Image (cartoon, rainbow, N blue to C red):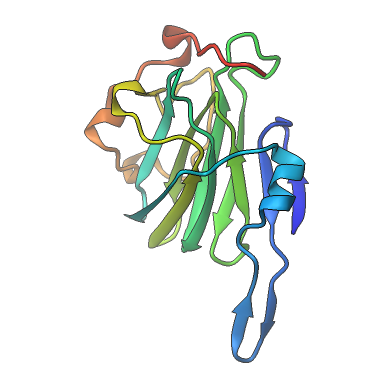
Length: 185
């Protein structure tokens, strides 16, 4: 498994070695020893999966302390633009983001650590998105940042008229209104 650094050192990309022939392919989708060598020790407690159509934009989501959540995300069908935004108060990369196309063709996985807001936009006709979480879903601690925050400036690679949001994602505050979260970095 190959580690690919990003512009924010805590956000990591993992690219598995894929073995293929006329029968299909095989790869290790997760290796605890390799993950922990680069991202530290984590106990994953919940796996989630979503199916979405082209233009769906989910995010930017996170959980507030004491229930912050790290996510190891990947796409098993289709293609998405995956985004992690640093919302850690006092961080040297506060308000900056990393974006990466994750797809069933490139098999890449992104580690989104606690203290980051996360979202993705569906670029293919449909996509199946799956992720491991290191904390349980805690609805009373869930929150979000506006997907179109001009200070963050994410290019979601979708035409504005193609963006499809959930009702809760239409009312998230700007990062400067929210202010960030207190987590160690």
